[in-house]
Amino acid sequence: MKKKVLAGVPAALALSFGAAIALCGCAHPESEGHTQAQSNVPSPLTDLANNEGTAAANAPQPAVDQQALDALNAMGAYLRTLHKFEVTADTSTDVVLDDGQNAALLRHTVLKIKRPDRLRADITGNGNVRGLVYDGREFMTFNEKKGYYTRNAAPPTLDGLVRELANSWRIEAPLAELFYWGNGKDDNAAISAAQVLGVEKVDTRWCTHYAFQQRGADWEMWIEQGRRPLPCRLVVTDTTQPSRPRHEVTYRWNLAPSFVASTFALHPNPGAKQIELEPAAVRPSFEEAR
Image 1 (cartoon, rainbow, N blue to C red):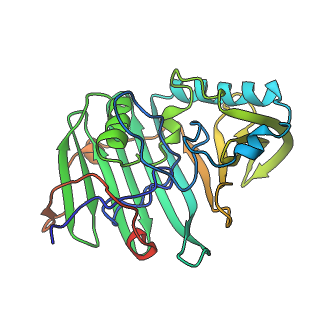
Image 2 (cartoon, rainbow, N blue to C red; image 1 turned 180 degrees about the vertical axis):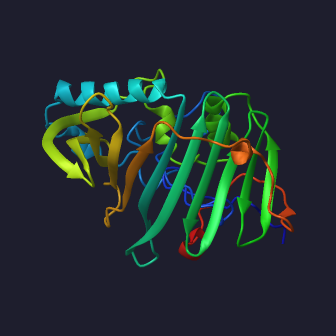
């Protein structure tokens, strides 16, 4: 049987590169001429293209608080101003088992960005390290436990890379939502309810808690107070499935990182074997996703 590097994954869960590289984030917007991969946990940025929830859509909808939308827009605009940063994120993503039970996959991601054309992501979980490196010309995925890597040509910008990964390879970039908020798309169009819930503490940070609804998803965002409206925490609940699987992520930011030259170099580990990257066709099992 031909070995595939990329097993099929739900786009918003972005659980693995070839059942190997676990990537957690929200689903991507669909680009013209391409079909978006299906997602277990709907994106907070994209309306769902399905017929579920029709009755709920016809029911009276809660009010949309403009203050909540303005906060979301301000956060997105601020993210677009960051040219160099490092984010560490702890994620818990539910996979629905055959018997209908949710099972959480835990991941720790370190994402390093230098706009417009540098990215490195190292993802740990289940005793393994997987990752993605991009240098403005090529991108490389790697899996230390499996001992293999892939190497492919890439667009000249980060935004182009994120779109190509999603549309050509059905790979969600690590923490992909950070690239889409405030990226010129009307992210508010699909939101049917929005409200401000109050101020809460996320680790050491005081953050304002917002709740949003759209067809197929309930989601919450905690945004840091003050002059840096950074996302502190995100929770997305898939309301189309009886078990209501969730995707949760807590972000921690470093806006003045120091990157050495080798940070974004595409050098596989000694002894690693290069294999071919192929687009996803089917959703992986729980064991494969781990």
